[in-house]
Amino acid sequence: MKLYAAPLSVLLGVAHAQNTIPITSTSAATTSTATTSAASGTDSVGSSGGSDSGTTSISSGISLHGSGTTNPSKCFWHILDKLEEQIRVPTRLTYRGVGSGTGISEFLGKDIPKDSGINTFEAYNDWGSGDIPIDSEDITTWNNQGIEFVQLPFVLSAVSFFHSIPGVPNGKGGLNMTACLLARVFDGDIKTWDHEDIVAINPSLEVPKEYPIYVGRRVLGSSSTYSITNYLYAQCPRNLDNEKGWPVDKVGSEIEWDESTHECDGSGPMTDCLLENEGAIGYIDSAHGHEEDLLEIALSNADGVFLTAKDAGVEGIQAAAADLSKAPASADGDFSSLEFYNKPGPNTWPITLVSYVYIRKDLPSFMDSAPRRTLLKAFATSLFDPEYIGMCDRYGLIPVPDGLRNLSLQGIELIDVGDSDNSNAWTFETDTIPGAGQGDFVISQKRESFTLYEIDRLAGDVADLKEQVRLLQLELASTRATIAESSGGIFKPSLALMMSAGISALFFMV
Image (cartoon, rainbow, N blue to C red; front, side, top):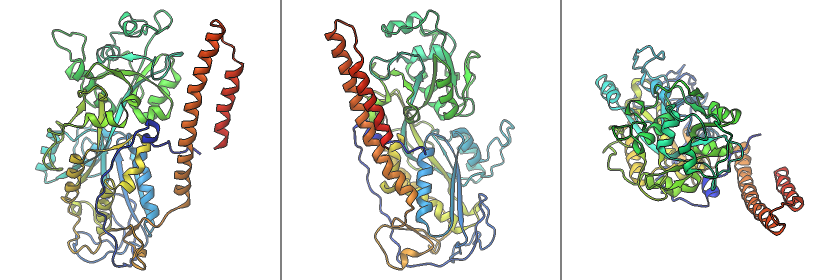
């Protein structure tokens, strides 16, 4: 069984603060008796349709289905599983990690089928998600069709470049790259790792002569591509004084790549490209790369400091989002100018993403069931509750700053669920409420499953073991250096081998 990774705050040795939001406790029990289809936007029997009054039966089941970016997919799966276990009636909540571009396309009903140029304006998911804001032109086009929506920024994360050069250490003493060098690599100008410009900032790099670079890149609309191309252009734009910089026409989620690059679409395939090809370079969300123990490249940030996402930590990622001057006044506005690339600060991470959830404002216009509409609103609210979003720090996701958080909470209130008398409203049971806590429309934090309980418990044990291993590895490195120095540069491995065996033995204790 693959365990959840340790919390980012534990691995980085930093804590971050999270404000609380008010949660409504249940005050009355409800009863229900109808079914809801698993298909998005349709219901089989017992639906309330567009009615705004009268409780709808849900005892036979209820479902919601989202799709979009792979970056926060583990976060979504964890929260959705938690909600499923806390709801009394049979509940099916799913999320397809298909990339930001596809998530937006399915949310809007844009370019369906792919590359057809046909806009159906129909929602193919109940909610979408992406690390890319919906662009201004699409907002205008869909608003003109009478379709309005909110974009709810809920977490920050980092994107990193990784490599697979054998013998190069991770972290300090590892590979350094500037945006200008990366631009030349991904645009096909630099093709070998022993290029003089790479060696100039990596004097300890030892690779064979003309050691080829295997360049991996995403294919379909990708937030990772969107973020790294924005970073390359922000720090190293092509112009008359910099003819080898990154061109403005190659900034976006889906671009025309140099023919020498290789398709590695999706987080999993990109990981495979890096693991299966010696001397490869690629990009992926930082937490995913760290979880797979990929070799991270130290990037030059806006202050000229080389650092990895691990070096930057939570504080360095949050620092990138300090300036919210380009955020819209309302969540149904235009976020396309809001970006966190190449921001100043010695410890600021230069490629920071903000992830959004997209929800249509007029839910009765495309979703028949009132309970499904109100459950969707309850799910959106959970993304700003520490009890739920707090589970996601282990996946490298950091809550948005207060300014964006408040904007999103106000945006949730713009969503019309067609339930004016609140007869189908979901409530959260935080403190035990006898009787009412057993209601069908209650999300009870007192209800748990053993599976998630045990997974969360083991995640804590794994975090402790990883920290022990890290400390032992540091001690082993120090011992190796001491032995080598005391023996005139000749390393005697006996003691180190014993320590290595001890480190390995720790993993059999889980």
